[in-house]
Length: 420
Image 1 (cartoon, helix red, strand yellow):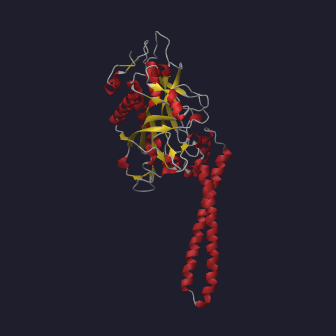
Image 2 (image 1 turned 135 degrees about the vertical axis):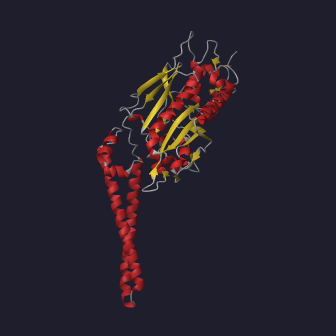
């Protein structure tokens, strides 16, 4: 949620920033009107309650002759307070819904534009070349029995798969490799819950804007997370940090779930876009003055992980029109996939500034003045399925086997996969 105080004090600045994200001036004015109306009602309710309290005290001090009239007046005041509280409750619902639908203010350095308008910051590594027609990940994994799409579809439907044998071991090796790199940079490993309550989804900004992408259980109103960012952020909801506690850095590993609404017919082959996948996710709580540096730090760790896997990739500064609701700025890393002859997103790294913390009520204790909201950041250390795709396609050999990158060999125990 954006800062209502900033909207009051610098309305033109907020309006200009939100205009970059497609929020029109009328909606910004509606937010200002709701904020002003709600604040006026709060003051009116407080005054009426104070008057009611004084009236009650007067009854206790009144003579028997005075008490009847005072009791009647107190009854009228009680009804007035109740009516005002009902109006305030309705206005607060409208206020919360309106502010919840507004995305974070974009970082001034984030490029303008929509999906496809990202700015490529750099290319890293050598694009692989082959002396054979490159195979895609489906052929490379299905042939040796490391991937079973048919049985995944039989059991669960489209966009599900089994990783079997070396495929399963490859996942576990990649996960432990990524965890070790993140831990070497001070991230605490976490296995979080992946069924969460509505407040966790709302607090991280996935509700209401991403509701169509989220799986919801039928009987218990639990949401299945699309990223461990959600439980890692909500882990410290309603908590107050001391300044010395920060930065606090986690790295979580979990299954993730996504409905992929709106992607009918898109990336249907293989395991690039599936309903269930696994990720290693970094998350950080920082002081506001340090969040931009922390953002660059998380990106550097992501690059270290991919470079260690000897993958060719590029880093893209994502335009404001393609940012998630909570992100002020986001960098994507896109790996080269020979099977698609294209760069595709494998990791992302977002600075959500105080947007999530305001909803989650996660603050820093300040000796003098108001407590500060923390800044929260997330970065995908390793998305299992997409990393497997990039790895097997970039490191494939003519006979269908795959060279294991040197950094992964201690975890996998071999130098070559799928060798006949």
